[in-house]
Amino acid sequence: MGWSTQQLADLAGTTLRAVRHYHEIGLLPEPPRGANGYKDYGVRHLTQLLHIRRLVDFGAPLSEIRTMSLVDHAGAATSEYLDTLRRLDHEAHRAMQRLEGIRDGIRKELDAHEAAARAGHGAPHPPNPDGDFMVVLSRVLRADALDTWNRLLDHAPEDAALSEFSDLDESSTPVTRSDLAVQLASVIQRIYVEHPELIAPALASGRQRPIAGEAIGVALRELYSPAQLDVLARVSTLLKE
Image (tube, rainbow, N blue to C red):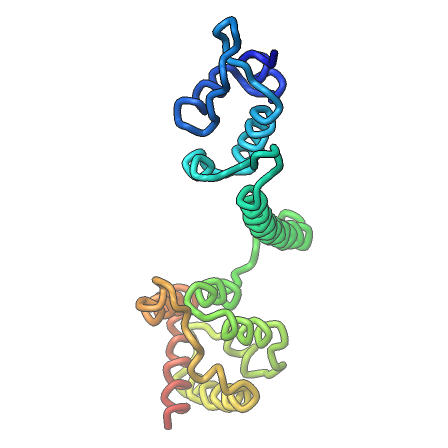
C-alpha cells in the first residue's frame, strides 16, 4: 500500500490543492487506486512531483512542463528534464549578470553623488555647463563616441582660450569675441588632429537619433550665455572655412 494524496503532498512539500491541479491539467498522471478505492501513490509519483516542483520554483511555466517527459520507466530523470535544467541554469546565470550590472551602476551613481557631496560639504553646486552638456551627449551619442568625449573632458588641454571662454560675459566686445573665436578654432583643430572621430561623432541608434541635433541645440542654448554662443558660432564658421 502506497501513500494517499495528502501524504504525497506532504512528502513533496506542496499542497493537496496543487497535486489535484497537476492531475487536472495532465501534468501528474493519476495513480492506480487501492482496494479501498483511494489513490495509491508510489515513489515514481513522488519523484515526478518533485521534478515538477523544482521546475516551477526555477521559473519554468506549467504549460511548458506539461509537454515534457520528466521521469523514465525506471523513475530516473529524462534527458528532456536535464536539458530544461541546463537552459534554466543558463537563464539564471544571465539574470545574475544583469543584476550585477545593475548593482554596479547603482554603486557608481551613489559613489559619484556621495563624492560630490563630500567635496561640496553641503555648499551649493557651482554651475557646470560642460558636465551638463555631457549628460545630453550621453543620450544621443554612440558609446565609443561618448567615451572619446569623456576622455577629452577628463584631460582637457590647458589653454587660456578655454578659460577665457568659460568666463566670457555679455560685456565682451565683438573684437574680443572674434579674437577668442580664432584662438578656440585653433585649439579645436589640434583636438581634431588627435581625435578625428570627433569631427562627426557617431550617433546612438535608438529613438534619440532623430532628435539628436535638436537636443544638442537646446542644451547649448540653455547652458551657455549668448556671448558664448556667439563665439561658438564664429568658431563654427572658421572651422568650415
